[in-house]
Image (cartoon, rainbow, N blue to C red):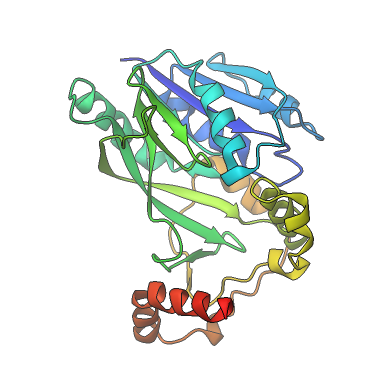
Length: 284
């Protein structure tokens, strides 16, 4: 069994992505790891190149920043990395995601067991979304995705889809995943506040035209999803602990302003309905 890892990154230092940690977290699973590094305004390429491993192969590309519809640019560049993979399995990690080392055996065993099972084309992971700091995570399963595919069988005409959040066959039919008992730690919302706002503004540009961006208030890009945060009591992956130790910004999770858990759970259950009502009222 041969395993290929793949990921993409651009301006990783500028936007405070834990991209080195993401790469290192899946490296033990991989026989090769393809990293698509887009032309950057910082030292992202040098940072990737500094990782000491002969498994890593960097491809440098100029990303077409005009591909804004639905974040299409992200899947285009993910597929550029995917095409370079030569294994039986492809392990995908985004630049703000980290796989805890405690799950490495689980993932490897799932790949071995399902290698020759045609009914299984992918492995789907649970998610934990950290928010504001490394001490808190989001607890609203209605508003934050709770599962995603991060391992796929190669040579099955499977491609990255949409904004690179998941995968489909080239003919748009869904892949056949199984759920595994492993969790991806998502750190995309853990940044110094000023960097978070900058990242959110520039990320929105992947989805919206310039004229649409002018109508969006700057305050919309700050930390604003409170009310369902939980204190994290577990352990972070070893590869990200050095980054955690130097985190020096303050973040108020506003836990004292949250509803009691029983009320929160009711509101979370009703979230799709209340969201729809708000949308209808805004249209009026």
